[in-house]
Amino acid sequence: MTVWIVALFLGAFFFIIYPFMTNWLGLEDISSEGVKIAEKENVRLFKEQKTLFQQQLDRGEIDSQQYENLLLESKHLLLLNTQTGQNKVLGIPSNGLWLLPILLLILPLIALLIYQEIGAGEDQKIASLIERQSFVGQKDTDQLQGNIQLIAALERRVSSRPDNVYYWVMLAQSAIANGNLIGASEYFAAALKVNPRDSFLLAQYAESLFLVDDSRFTDRVVSAVDAAFSADQSNHTVLGLKGIEAFVHGDPDLAISYWRRAQDQVDASGSIYIGLQAGIDRAQEFKARLGNGPEDDLIIEDPNSRKRSIKVEVSLSAEVPFTSDQVVFVAAVHDSGPPMPLAAKKIPAGQLPISIILSDEDAVMPGQELSSATDIKLVARLSISGSATPQSGDWETTSKMIKLAEEIETVSLVIDQKRP
Image (cartoon, rainbow, N blue to C red; front, side, top):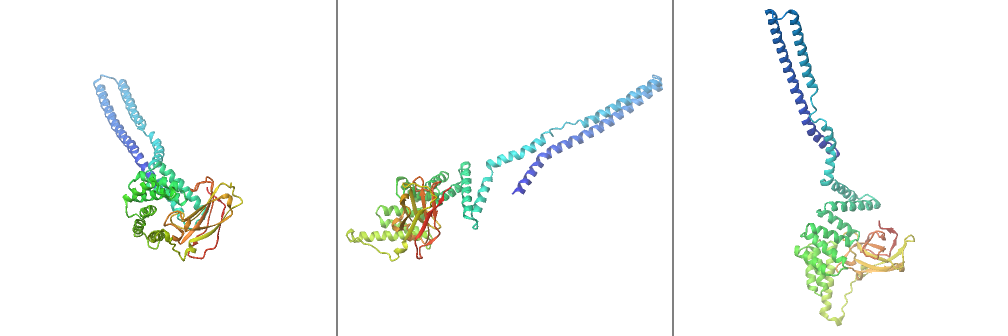
């Protein structure tokens, strides 16, 4: 990159220098040629005068002394005219040559200012940070620091180039990964200002609003879901939300219809498909209960229910300052994929240390329970502000990957890491 920049500057310098040099050389050639012509003319006039003086001497009009004096004066005049012509050549004006070093100095400065304004220098930095983040072998601390630098670079770039949808989406996805659902919804909203009819953005915005509003279909959530559904009726995220909305409103058949259409759009072996199937099973169970009447109080027992719960021991490190009225959030999330909780509980900090059980009953969203996942991790966070959204200054810890298909022992979580 540096070599190309230097080459471009050298090319630009050449185009600036060339007109000055050719103009200067051209004037010098013209002036030299003029001096030669003037010298020849002076010599011709001297010879004519000499001939005239000789004729006057021959006719007796002047004597020998006068002839010598006149001839001496003519020689002196010839010499004077020759020196004057040469001095004119030496005194050729610079014709703006003084401006050349100034232009050579100003050119890179102006180019740098223009490049900073409309160039892709910041984009190149962001691309380098993304490439560095994709390096698998780096340490966790390096990855965290790199992620902070990437987010800061993206925020600077969207402040100067707010029309870049890709950067808004990257910021939103980073916010989701950090559990900042409010920030994610705001980033998606900013991206929609640039491209208001993008079906992907509409779907992601609707889902983020749904989670921000505690998985409730508020007016703004319903409006966002309807707008996304109008833009793309085959988007699995939107179909999943429409299914949840129908289920909440007591229409299991419509919910099942939406969720099956969503399953057609995703990989049958993926976690999203499994989660949708869990929602379908629950809707069918609900239908069965309705069909047998409320007095039957039908309960469907799942033989694998033990795999849908996990015991967690939560405690605070002795170095963590807290008050008894602060809140601790404990959640199970996908090890990879959507960061939305599969199960979550809120505990007063004054009750720690404590043992709790996370199960499908603690699901935050229908169709997204522990039973819909295979690999999870547990997160415990002491909220300084009491908000469910992670904030700077909160204390937290994260477990290693847990395979639900295996026999699960009690997982111990010790909160000891402060969020930057």
